[in-house]
Amino acid sequence: MIKLLEAAQPGFKPPGSGDFIFQPIFGHSLLATKPVVLLFFSVILISTFFIISARKAAVVPSKLQFAGEAVYGFVRDGIGKDVIGEEFQRFVPFLFTIFTFILTNNLFGVIPLMQFPTMSHIGFPVSITIFVYFVYHYVAIKKHGLGKYLKDMCFMPGIPKPMYILLAPLEFLTYFAIRPLTLAMRLFGNMFAGHLLLMLFTLGGEYLLGSAWFLKIFSAISFSLAVGLSFFEMGIQCLQAYIFTLLVALYIAGALADEH
Amino acid sequence: MATSEESAFWTIFSYLIAGLLLWGGVGLLADHLLKTHFLTLLGMAAGMAASLYLIWLRFVKAK
Image 1 (cartoon, rainbow over the protein chains, first blue to last red):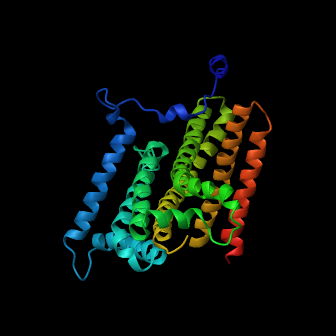
Image 2: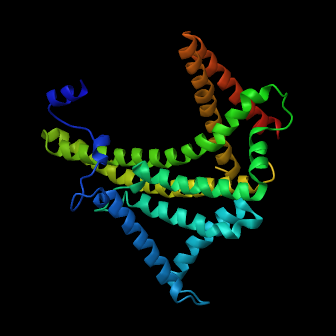
Image 3: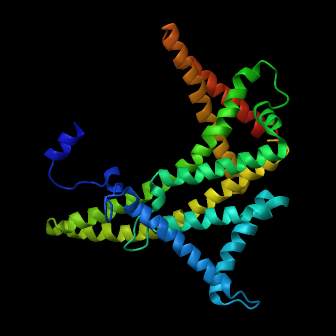
């Protein structure tokens, strides 16, 4: 039905989820699509940047070293130390990797020519979340033992016993499925919606440019909104990378805590 | 937003979803097996109530 309507109506075709599906850049492999290529590029970019910035580490830092250390310091002190507390040191590399990886991939969404946030494909946030999932459950089970961990999670003290039938499965589902799921969904949703919005204003501006003369004025408005929103998006992209890392740190802190 | 608030927000959100899904799902299954029609709704309501109770326990009473 929708397909019919689309075919029947001439005029502006708004961007949709179809615009997030790419053909392989070369060959026929699914590993050669734009998001995957961007992903690998981000790894190369991050590695290069931090290897160079750390290579000639000096007491008086160069500009590059200063930039690298600023990001590292932000994750270590602002997220790791503040949230996890005492044992934060051994989780800093993990948090730092997650933060820089998500940040770079998100920012690809507003960098000209790339203009695609990798994380707007659900598979990527889910993959990161799977890593996080294993890390924080492993940490908790190692620290408390499986039995005590589950008991602390599902059986809150101070509740009338029959209530546990209703509550224990609920707690289990929340901590083992829904909470990690929201982690991935939020990052995906934000990136997806942001990219869609930018596409809408850009394509809209382009369409209006080709129509009647008095509509060309609105084309300018649409384009300038696209530019303005790009800056707004940049803020969201940084914020989402930060919140994701922050929540990972909070989950780890929760796993380390004596009770939930 | 402060760190603890951000965490609380998403935990509360997760609890509410989990309550609806879990007990709503159990209700749906029971409806299917018993050929009734009201248990899904009842399950969803019970799940929501259980979620709210847990949230109250963890975030209101604990403070």
